[in-house]
Length: 199
Length: 199
DNA sequence: TCCTGTGTACTGACCGGTTGGTATGTTACG
DNA sequence: CGTAACATACCAACCGGTCAGTACACAGGA
Image (tube, rainbow over all chains, first blue to last red; front, side, top):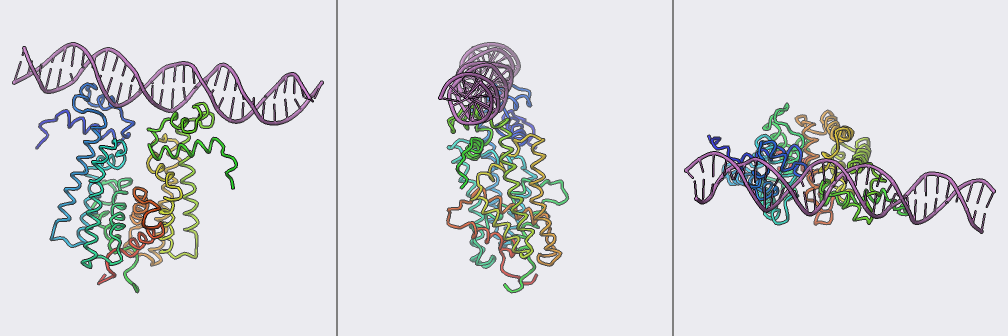
């Protein structure tokens, strides 16, 4: 639908993303990016003020999209708390397929942003986590989660499980994203021990 | 006790580790390392064949130590399966305090090893995961874990929770390493939902 | 006790190559 | 003719790595 205008700016961003994922930000030179596109550095610097500005673009786009998607899930009044946990887990695992490269670059290359730029991204990333934390907190009050649950740690656990998948999960493997997300959600919700003996 | 000989090789490795953690491998030049020590590059290359050889040293030392420690836990016949899960979780969280910089550099900078060197490290890292997987598998057979548990995914979940802590956990925060590890182990073993209703 | 040989630990100058970035064209098109 | 969209040529800084040379500790022989 919208592939009519392969405008150069978007093209540069896409190619860069792929190269950043494969080789890393520092190891990818502006020249590499230009070679891949068959243009020269003049073109690159016509569209981007610096290599870092390009990286910032990628980061901003990614985290903003992610926050929007999360917002829809958490605001959905039809979902129970356990369904929200499952939905967020699925959203993150599925994200590996949908925006895999973006995610990996996001986690790995953020430190190459200067302090000012990082100060714009980090709060957004934290907000994503705090939203989950808040959801768990409400779930505890509502009795959907154990009263002993530490919402902060639960949020970190969920993020840890999901984000670590970037290291190993390939969507074309033996398990689908849905199956992996379901299994992870079940572990976090119900644990891996057999149902209650005497707790 | 053994701080009599601050031999230069060890010194270089220590300083490098700190710089690699702070700035990253590529962003730390050999000159930076030398400046920090007040020596020249000749000295560096007298002790290390290359910058990458130094990185390999750090990686090898880290993963081997980790595997040894894990081996002791998994081989301990006095521990139940749930205690093994708790012990490994604690070992990994505690590791952040003990060898935090080493861990962070390990996760982040491995890709800068050449193929040959990576081929030595990756199997060791995989072995660490496979050992956990095997333990879970045995636990399932023994009835200590749900028969529905996917050992592979359970191992990834455990590693995800623990390793993600490298991103946020500070040993001097409000929670101790033991408390965090206990909470994480409890979530994975028992889940965050209230005890069984009808499952 | 002095002289001489030798290995260790290190210096400082230097190399070819690459980097992000810039200043200055040139071209095509409305 | 002017402006948007590029190309070309170049720069200073920095990179990992090399190498000839040297200060010095120490051993052994006369």
